[in-house]
Length: 328
Image (cartoon, rainbow, N blue to C red; front, side, top):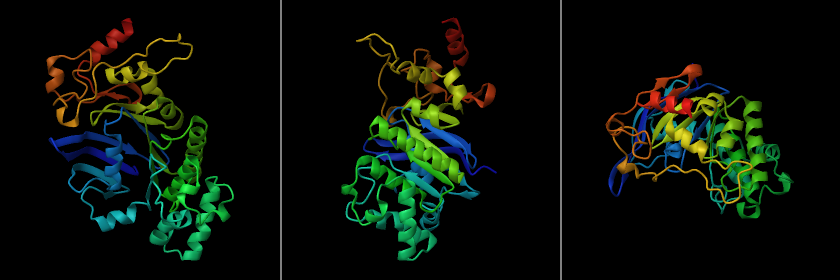
């Protein structure tokens, strides 16, 4: 049985302009020890999707569909029961290390809190375990810094502390939501290697959210490409990178800077701009920005089209897209 099964998940948010469907019928499964990447532009629904897994959506949000975690249905689960899972069996690394930690509490107290809450450790035992966690994630001279405050650490060190908090109770599933956004390239590499090493060491499942295709390519075995709250393409990472059959996926890859490109050469762009969630077309969310758009694209929600090797694409004009790519 998969560790995580998401089926036909819809999340509707209340906005000043009315209800907006932020997640539109997505589904996926994740086994223990498996790694999944979610990629897409800002506002495509990546973070809302994982917030729904954690039960961290606004109280006004309406969630339908199914999220089964190790056999337990999370949609509609009472908050008390959700608290037993959140931070215990599902850990989350936030995308902003500068604000993820509470500035008025020491890091020893913050990392130790889930140990006392979920595992019932005494203050002394929690402090001992916290020290081991901080040393494992590479905090230098951790013993003398347990009583330090977040502002006394660099951004990379704060992200490591956030990882220690997420791992404190040995979760079955680790969610990393843009874990390297605010970090320089060198620290980014170190953090990603740390996460991957810990996942391999502890046998956890991993969901990694990123807008960086290189990060996805190097760190996950399968991936979802999201746009407008929908999954437009999914499958094994190597297959999606090699085939990239959906026009949106093709646009993302075309927009990457190319090594050796001439100075001043403009990057390819996807025409138009991401519409507000309230303004998404009823059919394919990419309709209008896509050069293959016809009238039916605005009205018809594309069903998944199976491709070889577990690859799926949602596009009603997939034949034309593939034919043009083959002749290019």
